Length: 443
View 1 (cartoon, rainbow, N blue to C red):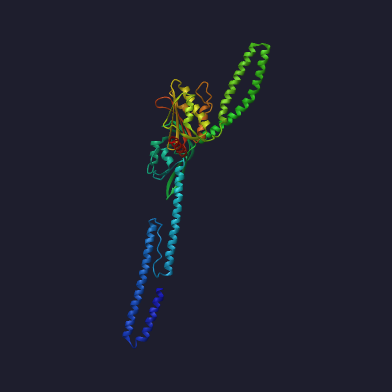
View 2 (tube, one colour):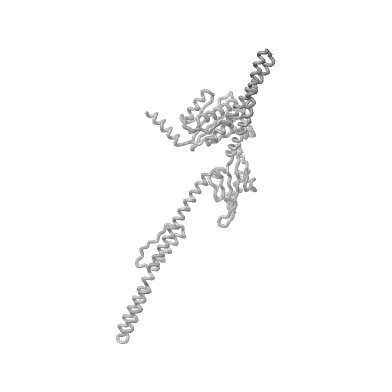
């Protein structure tokens, strides 16, 4: 546009030079001055317009440099050329695309952060200076830290988990870690990955808890063994019992007291063996829990009529979603074990609900258990009692696992053994039950 205007001004100058210079040099001078002033004004206007557009682009680029992609250039500059309009439109298109990509990237990062922090896998990222630059909530809980960013990885291992530091040479392995607070050993899958970020070396350490998965696999193996043993023993016991009964009848007819005592002894031992098989069959027959809301406190009060124990709970009513018969079986097993450990003093049962979690504690006042026995207490067939089957605690652990819970054994600091069972608690269900109770009291 400016070039066309300058061409017209040059043509006007040529025309005035041709027509006015020979006859009217003053008029030629005046017209030349006017044309020069007009050309200068047009150039100054174009220069100001170009400078304004460049200033707008400079301001927009500085916003992009600062990471602000919400900038959008106004397309309201008067008398701008088509190329200038295209530049402004192209800048706005680029900022729109960058803004969309940044928003998409932010959403992906937010989702990834939620997934990593919600995972129970301990995740720690360490840079080449041995400084922790990322740790999820599972890692903070594992090392009992509120924040791990900026801490030295090796120093943290040495102070909080020296057993993990002994596995620095392993990149992929299953390890056992003993926690000093609970005196419990847990299984973990350790994996390390070496990667480069921003040109520097980093190490990603992952610790996946596999204790519960191994317990489930171990329990399924025991169930298969129990089913096979039960099948074979039942096939043998049935004909032996029948033959023993027939022999006993024959001995009575012949009036042989010695044979009668022999067959009676055999029958007694067969019955004991049948009871033994029956007790172990409970573990193999335990089905998936049929969860329904029920009042846990009501169940405990009913059990108090059968078993003597003290009950401690701040709530009169506590609604829990689970299989009531299985939970009742778990409580009976734990209470009976506690009473057998110390029949002289009443067993203590306490119930607490906090932070979306239900905790049931059963404590006896006996001699407790050595540490080496605590680690084997949940194994099927393992028992320290002379007449114990070693199946009660195994059933308790499977019931707790079936309800997505956890069961632990530990010696109480003041003496005796305490069993703690943790279950996830449906807060909405509890609040609804409390609201119903208030309404009933109001009516």
